[in-house]
Length: 494
Image (cartoon, helix red, strand yellow):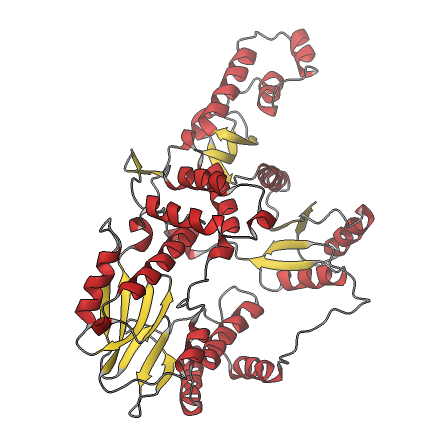
């Protein structure tokens, strides 16, 4: 199955199955819910805090057993017909196909995954979660009395328990026996000096048997966050502060510990260049935040669409203000990321085997070049260009038939250029400019590169893909406002 089609099927199945997740008795939604639950817990002297974790859950999830579990859940789901017209059998058939047709290449060899769910597939997490819900129910129901958990909470494959002291190994052996395939294996960690990490919390056992929660940081944690001087919009930098402050408020259970945690946050962010006013602003916003849900005003103008713009400090903010004036929402994206520059986990494809590309083919006789796009493999499109060009090049032109040739309509600008200028194309210099699997978006990228070549380098390009309800007259006003930005070159493609 083509990767893009498999991804679409996987995403569609994930949307159908998602409402089934989280129905088990011991399911933990997030660390905030865990903190609320743990405040009422009391631990006896003969008990300990313990955690279990599955080794490589996704790639060890038994597919056949998981499909049986999911089919049973679907058949008892009364709301299924409201989400899809597919029957339970249809969903299982599609799901089996998606889960058992995972291929990947490594060092030139093609491999098929023969067990478990694929990492990165939208449906894998849901399949693994539903399997763990079944395993959780079976394990707790059949656990021997001397190792049965007195309290149990599970977040996917991380399990927190309160159990009798010295019963950890027996419980681990029991958990490892539930999956008859033998692939699901648990490791465990006991509390150390009354403390145990779980999710991003540190659970601390107090002398009276109650517990308190702190923010957990690994020993390798370096307190390195997004630097305030980096090329990111201000709201993203303030978002870093808000995330850390929210975590403190939602996880830390005692006021004295909250003050200590806030001091840690302020010190770490100060070393990352954050000024005091930025932290004070976020803290004030959080204090002023009203718990009631804001209601939309009856006379509020509905949004006319959403645009994603590349972030360039100073310029992007001006453009955002213009869009806001016209009631257009904006999101900003970085022009480069460390991931795109440094991380290349997949085998590098031969340039001619790459598909969904915008490409460039230069001319040997002048400084012009051809920019095109194709959804097929680049090598296939390149051969077509060569064949068309060779047909034109083989014709011997006199002055008369050259004039006649210039009026002919050829298959591409390359053949036009050969017939008009009698130049030779530098096929060896052909290169890929960009990749995009979406055909519409790819054609826009092609237009951007063509415009950049024609304008000898346009410094900033905004692509508008707005909802149809925005009138063309409004689009013209927006474009005119953008064009009025002084001292910058802004190219807008609608």
